[in-house]
Length: 140
Image (tube, rainbow, N blue to C red; front, side, top):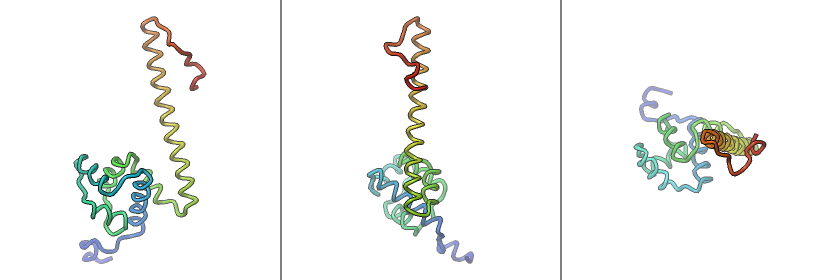
């Protein structure tokens, strides 16, 4: 690719197309419209017009790391997930990715719940009180 093509933004590659498609798939899976995503990004201080988002999703505009970070946050996901999703080569890979993502979400939620229970237990113990339910064996 020539310097002139780079300056014009031509010659977008497969990675740009794949990440854009991943953004679209995740956005749709979360029930978020392009307009809503644009509004969320504006509230986050990274305004991207609907047409710009559409171009990203269709592989017609490069996606820089800062944009990807903010888009991921606006979709309540991570950059890593969007890139991993983009790297999945077929629908079976994407199904496996979806299952792995769901498992990771559940594991993270479970870890948060465990921590909350530990803090509650410690707080009650510090005040010589017993929790109104048994925690041992509940989550461990």
